[in-house]
Image 1: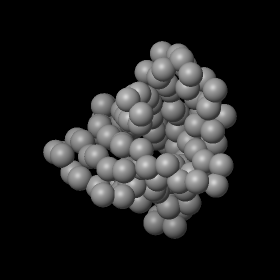
Image 2: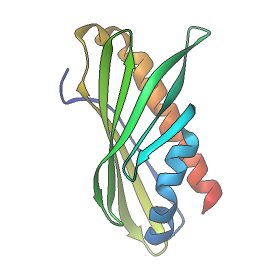
Image 3: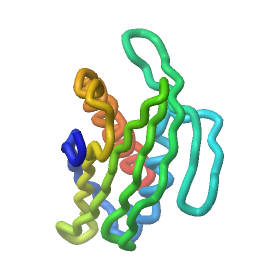
Length: 145
């Protein structure tokens, strides 16, 4: 499953690139259903992800690590989720593209970096979760700009 694209989404905001860049990391963190957050250092946080599945909430250990930053253009994180002795790693990238005066296109992509083979059975659930996260980030950015 290494390098397997999970989902991509894009949306446009009526704001400057500087404003969107300034709000992006905060919007991502505010949109994540995470509890017991621990800031490990400037580039890593841990917590418990509350993942809802079939009417139940599963607590999953989560680590989010900044993998790459190109100021004002892109922001990439490695999201590691651990449960039942297995580990899944997603590379989540946010690209900002200026498309007009005070208009920015945000391109979001999640790629599976590492996962056990059985995770292919829950790919639709992962896609839905990622799509909801990207939509929540979009809403948070729209509200904030």
